[in-house]
Length: 298
Image 1 (cartoon, rainbow, N blue to C red):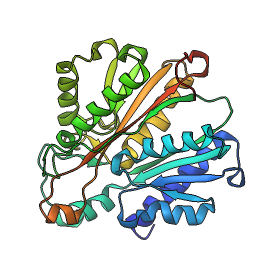
Image 2: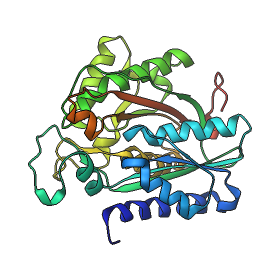
Image 3: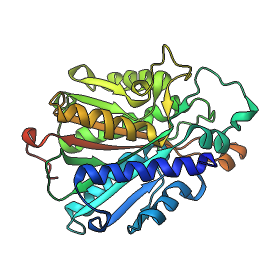
Image 4: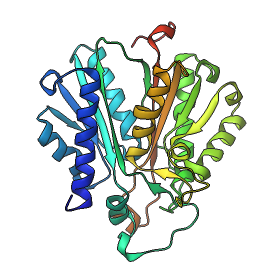
C-alpha cells in the first residue's frame, strides 16, 4: 500500500473477508459490523466499513477493542436484534508509533518497558447458531487509573484494570479460575503480566487453578525478537484469540477460555497535558459447545 494507514485498513478488510468465509456467510447476511482501532477517528475501521458496506458501529477501547466489539456483538445477537454480527479490529506498528510516540524514521530509543505494536487484524462472526464455540459471558470493565503517566510503561498501567475485570467476572458468574483452561490478558506483556498475577494472588484469587497467560507474551518470541517487553495494540489480542486460541479450541486442546483484553485510554493530547493514563479491560468467556455448563446463557 502507499501508506501505513492504508495497509492497516487492508489487513482488516482481509480479516473480515476470511472470517465471513469461515462462517460461510456473505456480507449481505451480516446485520452489523462493530470495530475500532487506535488511529484518530478510527479511520481504519471506518474506511473498512465503507468497503464492506455493512451497517457500522464504531467503538474505541484502545487495545481492549477486540473483546469490547465481541461482547457487544454477542449482546446484539443474544437480544434478538441481529442474527449475525461481525466484530473486528486492527493495528499497525508504524501507524501507532507515528501517532502515539515518534515516527519510525526518527529512530527514537525505547526503554525496556515499552511494547511493540502488533501489525495485524482479527475478526469474528458472532451468530445465533452454528458449529463454532459459544460466548457464554462478558464482563464490561470500568476505568482504573492509579496515576501512571509514562506511555512507555503501559503494561504496569493496565495491570490493575485487568485484575479488576477478572475479579468482577469471577464474582458475577460464581466461577473460579479453575473453571477455565486458560485465562489470558490482552497486552500486559512482560512488565504488566507479573504485576497482575501478584495482585490477584494478594487478593486471594487462586490463579494456580488455571493457566494464566498474556497475548502480548504469546504473539512474539520475546527472547529472540526485539520487541522490548512484548506485544501491544488492538491486533495483539485479536490475532492471538481469533487465530491461535480458536484453532486450539477447534482441535479440542482448550474447552473454556476467558479473554480479558486490556486498553490504555490515553491520547497524545492527554499526555501533553500531563494527564495520567486511564485504563480498562473487557472480558469475554468462550466455551466449546460440547462443554458448556449452566449458569450463564449465551
